[in-house]
Amino acid sequence: MKKTLADWLNWQETLHLSEIDLGLNRIREVARKLNLLSPDFPIITVAGTNGKGSCVALFESILNAQGYNTGSYTSPHLIDYNERIKLNSINTSDSLIVEAFEEIDNARDGISLTYFEFGTLAAMLIFKQQKIDVAILEVGLGGRLDASNLWDTSLAIITSIGIDHVDWLGDNREIIAVEKSGIMRKNTPVVCGDLDPPHAIAKKAKQIGAKLSQINNDFSYHKNDDNTWNWEGFNKSYTLPLPALAGEFQLNNSATVIAGLVTFNNVLEVDSNNIKQGLKNVSIIGRLQTIHQKPNWIIDVAHNPHAAKQLAKHLNSNPITGKTIALFSILKDKDIDQVISIMDLNIDEWHIVELEGSRSTRINNLEKAITKQNSNKIVKTHQNFLDACKSLKSTSNLQDRVVAFGSFLVVSEVINACHQIDGLGDKLN
Image (cartoon, rainbow, N blue to C red; front, side, top):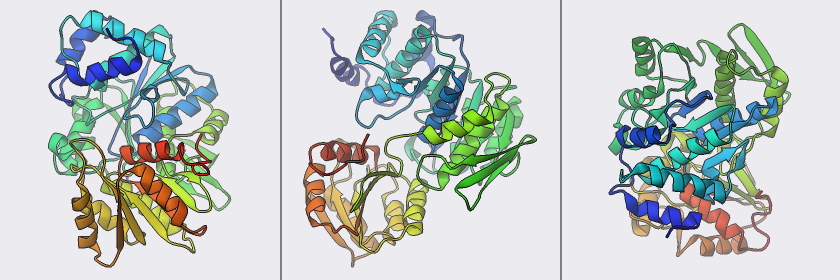
């Protein structure tokens, strides 16, 4: 008998034959049984390769500042499953999630659901019960066939298009863009923040009659010298504080979110003061997050070439007098060689750990990939992340910088390790 949240999650992992099973027929039937197909709140759907989680957090923060009750659904989680379902930017309680799982299990009548589909239905059920004003749904994989795309969006956001999840989405940006564009709906605003958007996005928008706005065409931004930046578009302009998220690319994410809010203003009115407040208040785990100083420890979920470029740019723009040390691992279905190649110029020493699970890259293959890129680099292996963090805490100098990246799992493991090591991770929330 399933009682706790952990019990439910363990059971869900064994319920369906495959972890990923794209398609909407099964989840649609269960949603129909739960009377969830026509929610009475607008939905913002966020797709893209990178920046989705940051955009969701920005939407939440700004809309909460305006006084709206928000519900958000994201994945994966870093520490607790509850991170996936938030109400007003706060993790949902175990009890609410367990109650939702029980209701879904009773309604499904033998229909098999994946772990992700269970979570998606639970989020929408909780949002309905809690009478939210707006839902913000992050697409898990692709867009067209993702469980989050069961519901018609009121505002579609496409953050960026990169090469990732090749086995599921294809191996070039145009094919991937077709999948991401599946969240568009007729006569509905869609905002694309990709600086070099694939042609498929505009083509798809025209085909279905979606109202497309693109960065550097319909809206734009530029950074000022006084810790402010300007946003312009749709006959409006704002001078705004920098978002409380590290990394220059967060300006792109912020500009995209503001464009979405402006095009959505007839549904949810937001004023400039609350945009400013939302930018100041926004937070998200594991995105260029400093968790310790002297030496500087940074965690970042960068796990593909597009994200690695942004991380490398940040490191290059913030030089230090000591060494930059990578604490790294990556899943075997990612572009390992390209990620290492992008980061290697900014890394003085590599420390590697093998992740758990069938998708992990074996430690010897990680070492080979790094030495193949640069045979002169020091590469040290560790049994686990706790040992690695203990070792780096004792051997790194105050002027050094430790950068943990390569996977959401890396960030999760490092956060867990920090909680077990005195004097490390003092800046973790």
